[in-house]
Image 1 (cartoon, rainbow, N blue to C red):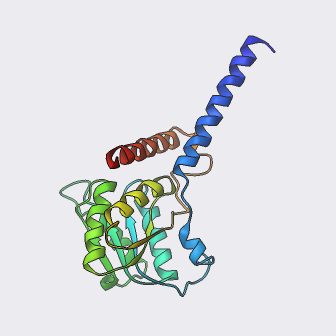
Image 2 (tube, rainbow, N blue to C red):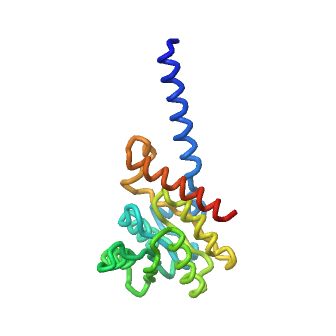
Image 3 (cartoon, rainbow, N blue to C red):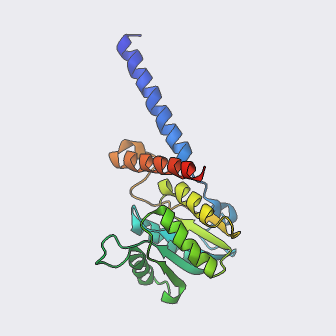
Length: 205
């Protein structure tokens, strides 16, 4: 084997190792599927107190997934979290609420958290709503690449309240696929999340 081919093979091995490692770090189990195997195609009789969705990335994809879950499970409230990207515009949470109402969700079923500017704040401020309402079992949904970090932050924010946070990542997100490594956007999202997870553990230590 020529020196060039050896170098090329080595680079391919490094590339594959990096991609596999990132996939392992970001991989999040769909816990809701374990509880309700048919929730994506049918209904679920299990009791949940709220479905939580946080803005960011493709907010519409996250919102639509939350609406679909809310419509298929027995939940009391739909909670949207996210501040306004532009102070002169409605909050992200309000925009998510408008989309939900447009898709048939009753306004009184929706709660808003409009202060959060990042994932840590999403968890912190939404946890206040969850605890204030006495919700003990909630479903958390966000983009697949973001789900693990969000889950970590929410579990931390709720760790002293015995609230069960059930992961249900959005399956339909145009920003993300199994072949995320083929696009610069995919690499940006993946590396951003890996850095965020590292910061979480460093901050928790």
